[in-house]
Image (cartoon, rainbow, N blue to C red; front, top):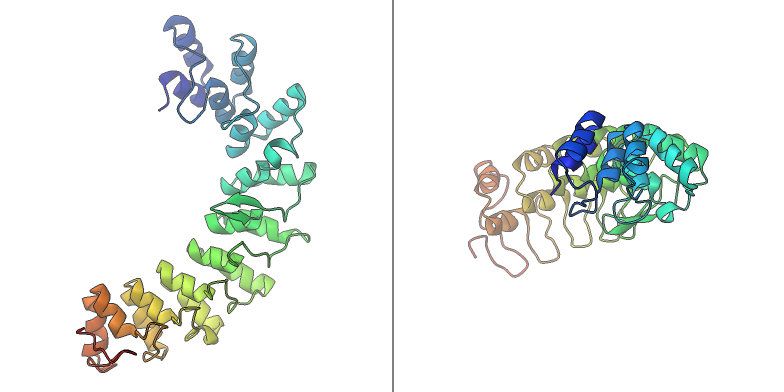
Amino acid sequence: DALPIHYACTSGVIQLVTFLIDVIKCDVKTEGKTGFTCVTQACLSGNLDLLKLLIKQYKLNLRIFGIASSPEAAVRKGHVHILEWLRQEYHINVASFKNGLLPFYAAQDNRLYCLKHLLNNYSFDVNATKPFYGTPSTLLHIACQEGHVAIVLYLTSLPQCDVSAKTSNGSTVLHLSCKCHSLPILKHLVEEHQLDLTIKDYNGMAPVHVACEEGSLSIVKYIIDHSPLSLDMTNSFGRTPLLIAAFSKNLPIIRYLNSKNCNISILDDKGFNVIHISAKGGSLDILRFFIDGRYCNPDITDASDRTPLY
């Protein structure tokens, strides 16, 4: 929804911007559908001279507040020099700006230098929570959810960082790192911070369940190798990693779990086992694996005495 003048400001090329304004007569005050203006686009570019030109020569509104603000734009691109100029020029309280959201933008967009600058120079609480991804999240939660390894390493190096903090649904950083398929983050949290791989969220989901649901074989292997008890662990619905992998129709994970001698006869709270789940989901390859390999009886019944044919 951006216009040529917005793209020009994002590029940071002053000659192009002035040509569009002075010669082509583009409307420099136009606003995009998402609320971005020429000023916020200039903040994204990192060109401070362009930003000053737009504000002082073309008399544009700085957009300190609003949905798309200048400080937020600077932080999202990691432009500390833009942020500091805005702070000094317009007396912005960085710590309280937008209720303390600036570090969360830096963590979300993987701006390590900017995040360090904010935490080192302003009074932010590293364990504060803000509503991200539908649940109150800490900076570490966001970094794990996004898979930003360098941000995670930095935050967990801070003595005040609470690595065991949970989200509103009970998810830990282990659950979140499994959700984003980040084995390096998971290994760091387990091996350097001794976090428990059997911990469950409020739905009874352990990290291994999340990994099976997400289809991350490398993470499933790591968890089983380091936490053998995870192999047949059930969630609140009575589902083991095998049953969750069957729901996700993930044959490679099922092959691996079977090779580790997982219990294939376990029923979930609806009385279904892996064969019933696979038959109901139309997973022919999984059915062939178990039946052709003679791992189970094809006429096995569920808790209601029904066979997979039902």
